[in-house]
Image 1 (cartoon, rainbow, N blue to C red):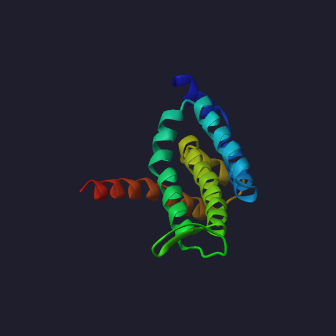
Image 2: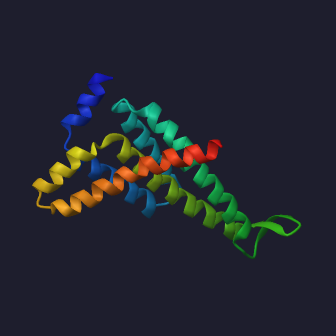
Length: 163
């Protein structure tokens, strides 16, 4: 475990950020097949840095459920000409299915990249590097405080859901 932590500390946080952003953009721009490959690459990167277990835990609790919910909502509520399945007022159309696959592949890739970024990037180091690159300390403070809010919101959400 210590070696994996050392590996992430040796890399410039901007390098990790560029990798994560590149994978997210590739996932959003191309179709679902490329998104699946990008997510597999992200899982491999997380494993290489010794963060696969925590990555998969967070990923399965957030991205997987969000994509499943969006997929169901999309297939049932996007109208189309070619009906694949119908039951009462609910119907699945080929157009709805195509649109659902497109949206979910984008969410899948971009969300997975965001989780990977939070798993691998030390925000303090990133802010120091950004300030050295000439970014205003005010901007880096805003970024840091915004990024610190997310884990607090996740904890609150977990507490609310457990009630």
